[in-house]
Length: 304
Image 1 (cartoon, rainbow, N blue to C red):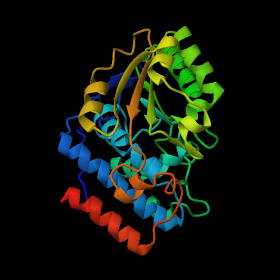
Image 2: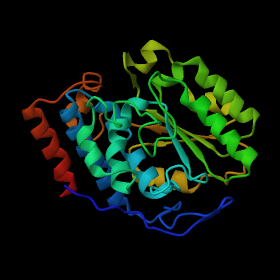
Image 3: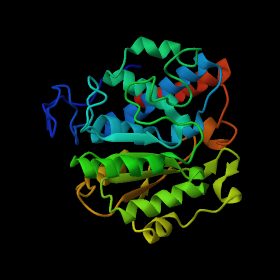
């Protein structure tokens, strides 16, 4: 099922001069129904790409489909015709294994031709299980080993401050990723440097690759911990597009001094009964033809 792009196109300006007329500005109009359909469209695209590759991350990607939908079709200031535009908002994937859900979005917005999707997972393809900034337009930093991208985000946000630019740097992390010590060093640095232009989004779905997050290393209470590091914290239902829109629309001006953490409580495998009932089993896997038909019918039924 095809879902039409919801963003509008506007002229913009930057410290470096006029921006491209294809700039997608912040706060683009998109209804709640549009964004919910877009999240399910991301799920369907993920299923197709994983089938093509022969293996992939379903449940981790499904938990953050609404986050992708709201960020890319409403919130982010980006220019698909000029991916390196200095004043674009940045998005870094700490949980880089969910890039499968991002590839259809970037193709739809025009960062690269849609026929690139047919190469996903193949040798030499610019689109792989984890994003590579040197191969794929629209990727602001690479991922592989988790735990690094909040540190990189701190550097990008600090660089924006030093250059006098007003872009925001968003970093999407998983709650399992927060077990990495480097993340908390970055959290401490972000408040030390008063980076109000940095937004961490925690996809808190309760699971890491090895099982329930709390069983490996308890990281709760997340809100209190980020607040103790000097962050401004919001805790929301991360599978609710209305809550996401309201939260991102209310972000303080990037010139502020407190970094922002959005704790998005999500359900691993959200939107598909099969995945929700056994989220860990579908962290990495491949649907059988019969399972795929069942899952696609469930998602498509909501989109009808």
